[in-house]
Picture 1: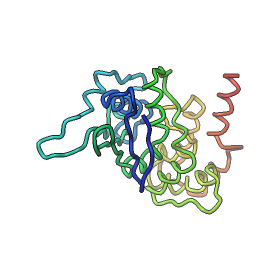
Picture 2: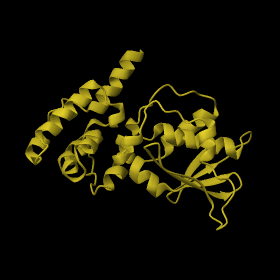
Picture 3: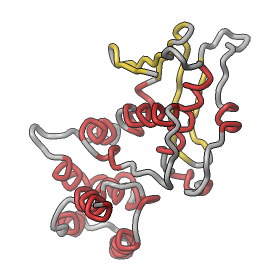
Picture 4: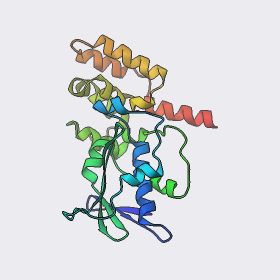
Length: 237
C-alpha cells in the first residue's frame, strides 16, 4: 500500500501482493485505533475496544450501491470514536480519501495511513496508541483553523496552543480546550492531567475569567506534550 496527496486529495494504491480487501480493512482498523471521542461520543467510548477483522469488513462496501455511489468506506463516529474517514473508489486498486472532513477533525491522515501499512505488515497494536500528532504542525494548524484560529508567522505549536486556549475554552468548553493545551486527547490523560482539568473547570464553572485562563496556560513550565514524549523516551531507554 502506498499513498500520495494530489491537489489536496489523498490517493491510496494497492500494491503487488496485496488485495483491496486487505488494504481497506487495515485502513478501517487504523482509523478506529487512532480515533478519539468527541462530544457525545464519550458516552459510547471504550478505550479497550478492539476492531476485529469481522467488524472492519462490515465497514467496507466494495460494490457500488444502486445509485452508483463509489463510496467504499464511510466511517463517521464508530463506538464513540470520531473517525471521519470516507474513502471512494477511483478505479481498481486505486482509492481516494475525503481529506476535508478528515483533516478538520483529525489533522493530516499520514499517521493513520502509516499505521495501516504497519497492520498490513503484521504489526500488532499495544494498548491505546498516542495521538499527539494531532496537536503538532500542520495537523494542529488544520484543526484549530476549524475553530477560527490562525497560526501566526513563526509561531511554535506550544505558543499557538497557549495563545488560543482562553478563547477556545469560552468557545467549545473546558474539556476540548484542555486537550489542545495539554496536546493530548482526554482519553490519554494521566492522573495529573485529570487533576489539572478538574481544578480548571471548578474555578471556571460559572463565568470563565479570561485573564485567569491566560494565567493558567502560562503557568506551565514547558510544553506538556514535549514533556510527556521525553518521559516516554526516558522510560523506554
